[in-house]
Length: 427
Image (cartoon, rainbow, N blue to C red; front, top):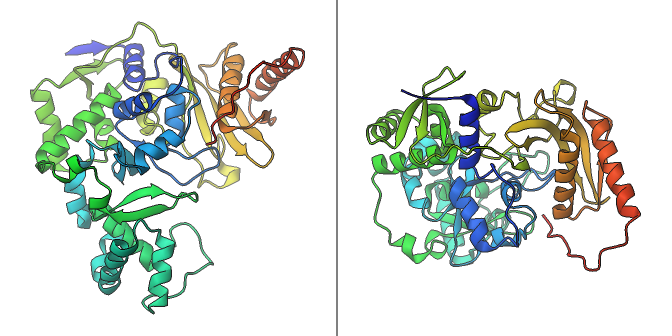
């Protein structure tokens, strides 16, 4: 069996994710943005906006400051390069990946959670009405559909007492139709609400008439995409990328090994059976730097992250404040080929401040970490349109980070202003 050191495996993973080198020079074009998405295969969507929307940050991590309107155009205007569907979870995927998930849409009774899979039985009459309303009004939000159902006396008034997953009947029906592919998200509005429309009015023509992909072939191709995006990992890592499970995923793994697409490798210190994608490259070094969203594909699978980078990381949004180890919305900081810091960040838009609520050094941080992290925070603040970075005195890296940022501010204050400025794109 082929063998690989943990350092080589880490570099393979970084190259596969496009994080092994510095960001490219020049403006971020649509071609560069779609290149990142094609490499990652998907961008996870999440409504938490304490820093920036989840799908926006992985692109910044790899390309630097960019106009987020590029993503809005790619997913919200014809001809669409990205579409929303259930992939890892709710995600933007390249249009070429959408047909590979048709089996999941058909298998909604097994693949969707109860509030969705029960809709045809629990809300049959409302479902038919919602279909008609989307056909007539689309693209349309769940709020508008609810209002129409309420006017027709087909649903109760919206409750204002709860939050989160307190979905109306209209929202449940729309999400069922979205999960099964009968409707799609034509775009997101300013409040980040889906604007639902009939799939035939959203999908590019080539997809509407694409040949059907068999379930076995689709799962095999999805598993291969997950393996390619990881470079190296366990079967669990590869399955998790598109949330594959069951005998079909196991057969897909065996087929890919038999075909030589996945090569079994023994990675030092990794006890589980591990595989390398045959196209994976081992860079001689990794020299990138990036803050990674909690929803970045590199950090999704926490056990894999711990095995490769020897760091503990969990998202603690739903953990009571006194029990949090690192903070509310913590981003790992990748410095070269190590994760050297964990920073709890908040975009205080009303004050124009990127707040570092806490900054913790990992065992792999060294004397260069404060300066490297300060540079990355300044770049992030610029992209978010926040003039200032403020560090709270929490965590063992806070003092060094404050000193680095203070030195830069003092240096900037003594220098003449630049002749030309460029406004940052809002996130």
